[in-house]
Amino acid sequence: MSPQTYFKQYINGEWKPGSSEKQIENINPYTEQPITTIPSANEDDLNEAYRSAEQAQKDWAELLPAKKQAYFDSLLSVVKERKDEIIDWLVKEAGSTLVKAEVEYQAAVSIIKESSSFPTRMSGEILPSNTPGKENRVYRYPKGVIGVIGPWNFPFHLAMRSIAPAIATGNTVVAKPASESPVTAGLLIADLFEAAGFPAGVLNVVVGRGSEIGDAFVTHPVPKLISFTGSTEVGSHIGELAGKHIKDTALELGGNNAMIVLDDADVEKAVEAAAFGRFLHQGEICMSINRLIVHEQIHDQFVEAFKEKVETLKVGDPSEKETTVGPLINHGAIERIQEDLQASLDRGATLLTGGDSEGNIMHPTVLTNVTNDMPIASNEVFGPVIGIIKASSEKEAITVANDTSYGLSGSVFTTDVHRGVETAKQINTGMIHVNDQSVNDEAHVAFGGEKSSGLGRFGGEWALDKFTTVKWIGVMNGYRKFPF
Image (cartoon, rainbow, N blue to C red):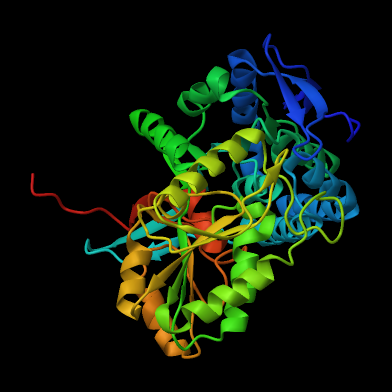
């Protein structure tokens, strides 16, 4: 298949048009021009994809570990050979700046490398028994078929983060990319797996609207686990559907991440970290810093330095090397953020810098005099706007940071590392970083959130555990006596 003409579904090793009468327009968020038009999948296509994955799964699971790893070695080679193409698609489809696209590409490569070790890490255990002459064996198996719903913000990496480990542990996959990024979250990945020689049916990709195949994707009888990265609202609905059908889920959802800057922090370093942690990919990252909570003793110094830093960030065409802040995914995002911005200003926040927008571009925007109940602080902004909250003490900063329904990532800045760790322990979040910003993802480390930010963990042994199941086989050496 030509890598420049992604307009078909990928089912059982074949590229075929979607059977729905509806279409998905793939739009470049910067130029707002169409990239391609894709005939959507319907439930018949979805069923074919799931049945193909089910049929392929047993043979794939029984393949020797070394042979599975050879496929992943080939995949890694293909991904490296086609790096420029992957970067180009991330720029034109997801509005990624070149810096963000490079970060995303490297993260995906790390996931593939980590996943390639999984076939030889499918370990079990032998445990003692309280029954004389018996031993307890625990065997590990793949779950079967995994359904993966990919997002639009870090589409290539976050789809690969589930697809690669699921397949490496002996499962097969049906992926449904976000309609805003059907290529980078699905069709491009299928093309790479096909080029690497993976057997037909191991990975299938269906592109369709949630309104047409979304619920069926979750409730279909074949998949044993649904992996979803996206909004808390959609994730909650997926969890509800999966629960009704006794399916497992891996959910990485929204965030309202706080960066606490304590009174002894290195202000210059904290400002640099805050700018990266908020404005990388225009703030369209679930791990982005959503609130800056700054101790009153250094608040004014921080605000002045942060304003100066933010005003140096270049805004515009994401394909230009110097651009830091590119387009939001669509104009609806601009309208939503402007509403929260205006509502916060109406409630007493002060506009420090920014606030303007043209097309899908919004200039980096900073508010001061923000309180935790203002929309710009209480909502997940998912854009290049941030509020600064003044805290009178470390205790107050911790209270404010925890005053949210989310718990994904976070940050603490202080020159006393022990103090930073003790503060981090008190933040109710799945991940938090001392003297670093909140956007971190390492393929071998547990990644995931608490509260409304999701269920389960990705990365390393946690991903291996999530995409597998265990079976207890008790073995008697001889025969036991029973009381009747």
